[in-house]
Length: 259
Image 1 (cartoon, rainbow, N blue to C red):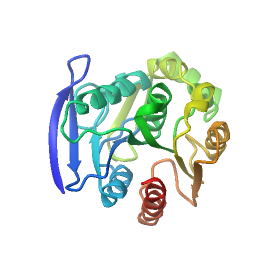
Image 2 (cartoon, rainbow, N blue to C red):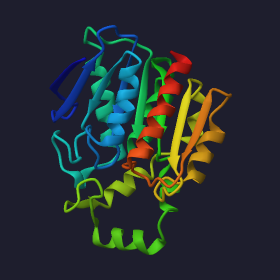
Image 3 (cartoon, helix red, strand yellow):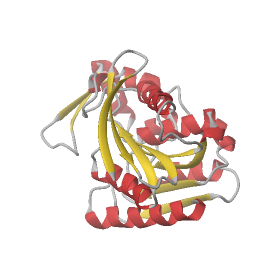
Image 4 (tube, rainbow, N blue to C red):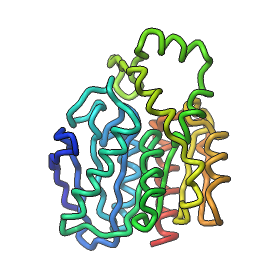
């Protein structure tokens, strides 16, 4: 498997670091996206990618701008809008590469989940299959996951500051503009466009994008070409070996079902 790292420019002229794993006998193409403050080498992101690679798909992973990866920008400026635009820009760049093919698959975690779903709603003919994992469903639903005081304090101070769970010791500072932007988005009104195979996975201990949110999304997706899986005992971000192994098997079976 050929592994290559390249730096491309997004529409704002910022550098995006892209990781290419091109399958020698390419059967398909998949783009895999991290969530808010995530990065392309997170264990769960690597598990999504590996499942595609094992099924002879070439895989493109990238760090959005405004995250803790290798790309430009500052985490405090992170929004759904900027993550989504970066996804579009990476796909546009890919269209000029020799390995590009469509329709392609999209997999993403959390904020990456809503971004890939927004893309699939905008360009359904380009998307072969969609895996929004522990996905944000709407800004409005996100506000239901914490008490009002949490958001009132965030709005008043202008920032939310908390320690990273993926990188202990790293303090994550996020502007209130993130929430203002998030409230513009809701997957449900356009979910009828998601007629491709769709895979949903959520942990039973996910407090950020809980099962009830995923059930709302699942119910709104048309037809029977959809799956939802629960990972017992798993939080929002998957880290435990047994949880990752279970996700790998679910992904593998799902990819085989349409490949």
